Amino acid sequence: MATIHIRNQPVEVDVEAELREFNWTRPRWTGDKLLAASPFRYDQTPSFFVRLEPYGDYPAGTWSDSGAYDSEWASGGLVKLLSFLRNETYGETEEYLLNTYGFSQDTTDIKLIPPRLKVQQARQPLAEAELSEFTTDYTYLESRGISKEVQAEAGVLFDAKSRAVVIPWLDANGRLRSVKFRTVRGKMFWYHRGATPVRELVYGIESAKHKTAILCEAEIDALSWRQAGYAAIAVGGANFNGVQADIIKRSPIEELVIATDNDKAGEKLREQVERVMSGHVRVRQAYVDAEFKDANEALVRYGEYALRNAVDKSEVRPLLSVKPRSLSLGK
Image (tube, rainbow, N blue to C red; front, side, top):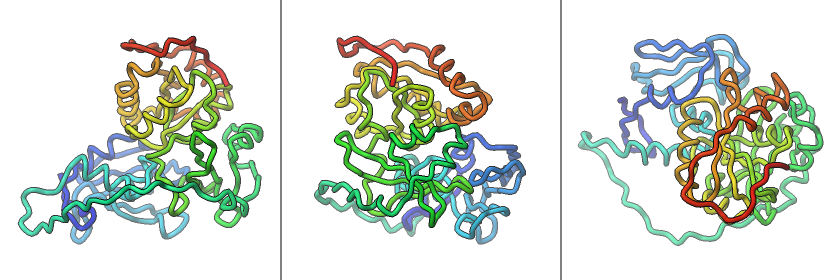
């Protein structure tokens, strides 16, 4: 365990355990560092490292990427790295670490900040005009195996200024709630400032009109499943909460085919979704081939067959009860 500061409070975090939740390319674990290919770029060389232990003025969890495309992603701390790996905002990752580890108990100079009670105000949708400045350049995701038709149906756009794919997040009523920007040069992403946090949303829920849907982590994976002919939704990260569960329960979905990433974080998410949704919907577990990290990698390498094969081999999980209506799979 190592001490890092989160919201000005010292927290004892198992840095190595957190990093081992994710698949790394060409990793080498030493006593005090993880060396690997950069998670922020399509990189095959060990040009990235994370400190597992503090070193001088550098706390555990600090990292450096020698081949970074820009200075913002050349170095940083543990929270920034985990927020990328978990596909969350910085604040959501802070909350995860605080909920998991709490404050350090052996420090005498902690200044505890008492919780503030506040009324939760209803979050407002974003104006549709927020998307008006973007174009319909589908080139990047076409190179990832996702057709213009699937992108257009999902409202995918392109930000020429930042060279990023623009992915709208809508609520069940089709109102714009958030926007994700995903660069085409690397893997970096960010969300529209002031939008509804994705932890309070389910990507693709507005189009979940069928009784069966694939559930995955990221938007591009959801679009990959749609390319293969399935209805698909995404939770936007490696965590599933009660708000998202309630959104799905209120939808027409009666069966979830869980198809998360092939890493420890994805496996935990599988178990979490199955546990929370048991008794509310029928659950099946689908796995893309283990040589791939996620659905999009499988789609790019072997095409739609790889995803259909995963669904054909999916495992039905026993449930206490399901909605008494017939089940069907399809887009």
